[in-house]
Length: 127
Length: 407
Image 1 (cartoon, rainbow over the protein chains, first blue to last red):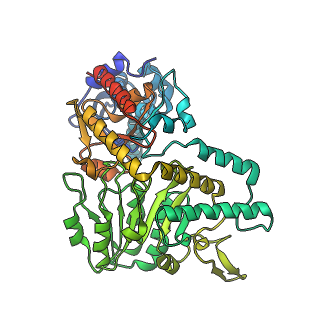
Image 2 (tube, chains in turn cyan, orange):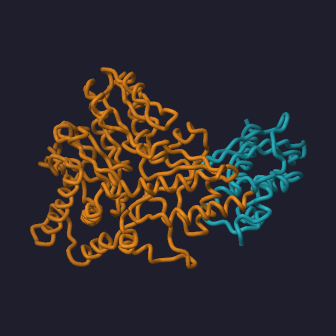
Image 3 (tube, rainbow over the protein chains, first blue to last red):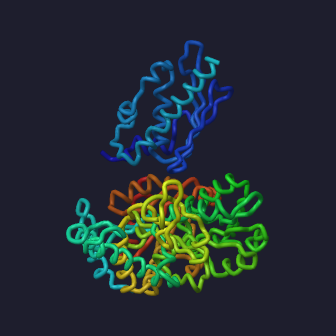
């Protein structure tokens, strides 16, 4: 399977949910130190602990940007519990391409970032 | 030009194709491929002559010691050191620099003293000095880069003071390929009695290096970037300077006399080589040096400059390509970093890889430098003895393919 499929290239050139949100519930930025990729994600979470809105500001490769774009579409309406249950397998399935070991970090950056954001929220609420 | 096909034939790796595509290896600044004679020595040594060094009375051990010390001698001649005692074996360039930062740094640098590095440094010649400065409450100063990607010598002169204890600079950048006129920098440091360390990881494999002419206190480099095995770093130090330094690691092979509660230490070079060293790889490294000397460093330099010039011409034809190299090829080694508008370096390298073209991408262990150029990551091609114009033509084809795909 081709790494740069039409879907991947399309989401890279025109990412869904691009931009910052006004008054987000959480904002988190993550860097991939290996390649310098940066990703900022804004989340709006409703009272039922579901993702209401998502804004992504990607600055990276086609794989990480497409992964952020596709994931942002997938997550709207999802509960935080459902997001926590997502795995590497789900991301690969969502991207629909074969990821070689060197690029796994790129593909996983968006989910890792969101999970970190949710963990931060949880810790904050416990305090 | 070098006789490319003859040279390439001596590297077994180039006889292996991937899906019928020949290997185009453009990442020698990271680590080079190995000629058959280096690989053969390793195999023969383990099969016929192996034993520990500096220990046994038996023939095998004596022969091992002899071969190990012969390699040291060859290396000392290669960089024109005064004596083989001035050559210390480490694991790599990074370890050589850490040895100096701990041994020389801990005993000579005090509160408010100054350490100077440059904006071109690899993390290995930056982070150890950051840590030393923190440990000792010393000040770290950085020589800035000019717009033409060469170091700002005038600023350097102003950074030097009586408090400057060591200047640690690269002789060639692993990102921009910039060749630093180190002799000029050494002369200036001498006026303030500062010690000077040259990071030769990129320069020693490609440019003639004469430590007596440079007059540096330390020169560090790695075998694996010059056709030798991994796991061998070299630290050259002036004998008097090394003599004044305390050992870095303590234990076997570096002692003179050991009592239960006190010990005295061996003379140079053993003082800095605690424990069983990387014997086989040191011995094999000698063959790599002989291979380089047979071709001749002047020829290697000329060859790489012509490849750089050719690559610059070919790649600059694309308006999407931005090159990060000194304008004048005279100021650069065989390294060409670039970005392609609209294509992230990791994606470009993935497409190049489909054509069996190996380039390096990312921050090249020089994050502050890459960021100062206004980029999050760069693509880099780097050349060595086995590369030819055809390699660059194949890379250009991959670039064309990438541009079409990402259009």
